[in-house]
Image (cartoon, rainbow, N blue to C red; front, top):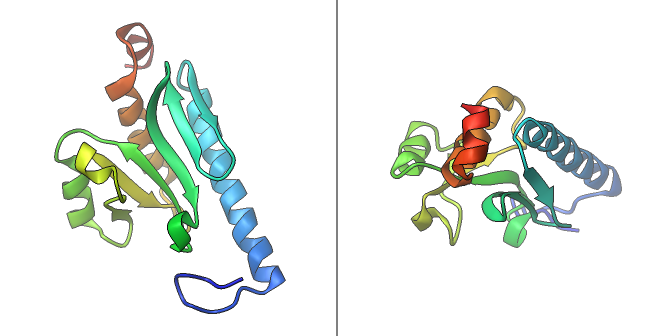
Length: 138
């Protein structure tokens, strides 16, 4: 298997490490969603985050061969551009959905700020959640 990021072959041990990192980040996101009423994560390769049937984000692994583990979530108008400008090593404009206000955050970095991830997921949740749910979080 070839890594799209570096163009090198991933050996079995490297693949196991990458799979473990993906599973660990998904578990952290699942914990975050558990704290948000009716927030759910589902799917096989692209794990979709939803609230009340509305998509608020995706956890992706090697999306279109990019070799990265990432999360893309809804953001307030203009926030995605500001976040990417503030730190392009951490944030990115996700393909297809950035124009709809989504922002991406890389989860395969050595030190992920999970409080920041929690804040991004919560903000995305509050954008999409019905008032009856959002008032339980605020």
